[in-house]
Length: 473
Image 1 (spheres, rainbow, N blue to C red):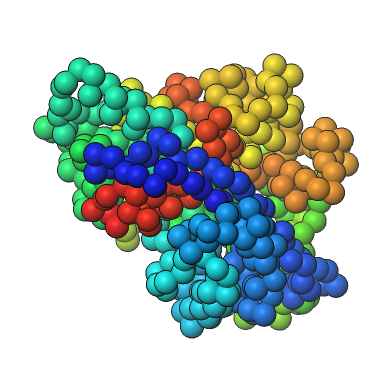
Image 2 (image 1 turned 60 degrees about the vertical axis):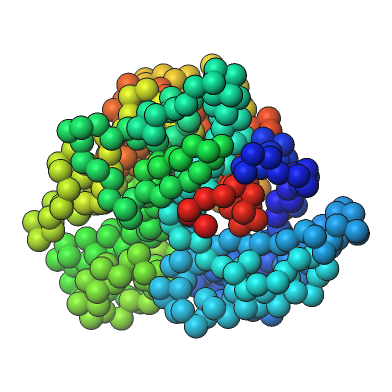
């Protein structure tokens, strides 16, 4: 939970945006429940989409942080302090899966918030963000924390000059955000005479300091790291069943070699854990054709960097190689999944958030020349070192991985999948978004700026309070 504060006055129709600052951050603690998709195990749930069957636990989930807010925010400001919850891709998928249950989650949260003394007056204060909103809010947050808007505003005021609406603002950072269910790409883009105009569904207008920004923005649902893992494994299941396995050889548990999981590590999942997601619908339909008695899968670590690369590359190529599908945009503006994406500008820098930071933070652990930090420049990860790391986190056994990566109970959940993570992020940047290797040097991955936590929450708060007037509201 993020709490922001700012001066009450607004200036020049845009607000004193640069003076917004974090008041405090409170981490919501995961709730342990019995895991119905595994055997005799519990799981920690933290994403609100995981509370669909546990609505009664939501009030106590939010209680510690809401009580902290009551204590830390001056009591005379409680009724003037609006409270918001923006749900992202996990809830977008939950809504596609079961709209009634998704709405029940939101209603329970609204009821919880209404029991506290903060300003909660409309249902819209708790809602599911669109992918476009999530992308734009991350772009606003990043450039505010980097003081890009403030810089351009002051520079223009001092010079007395105006900025052409078509000028590519070289000071604005592009933003890449990798979550569990989706990933976002946002950057400013100068439309040249010979270029293809951005379709309306891939852009929006944002007015900042009397300047209209129209960045390209897109959210790739089902391409977040967690959902991509499910899709990768669902395809492994179908590939194995398609390899002439005799039905008599099948039991209720199917053992599936996974080249993106190190040798000695196994994951057992019940069938609904893999195929409940909307993202694996195609694989689920194919699986249903085999008419087996399988009720669970055990993914057996068969770590192999080369095979992991090949398997994930096929995931990216699946749509591109589908002859039944066509791209309606010019070739240079057609992304790997046939959506629109302009050519990546050559003269702007990009900031990678969320999953990008955590993956490269884990990869940095094995590179002596890089010190642990809240941010990294990909230029500091030499090509040979990254290639070596993508191999050394795959081509080993689990016991060696634990020693090599300093795996402890507190970080095992994240580091045990480093083989998959390393290859997926690399392929997403190069095969997915389309960065050339030389362009990767313009990317930095950040967890925290000196002025605040990286993410999308600040931009969302500013938009929701009309702190920045925008056509996007």
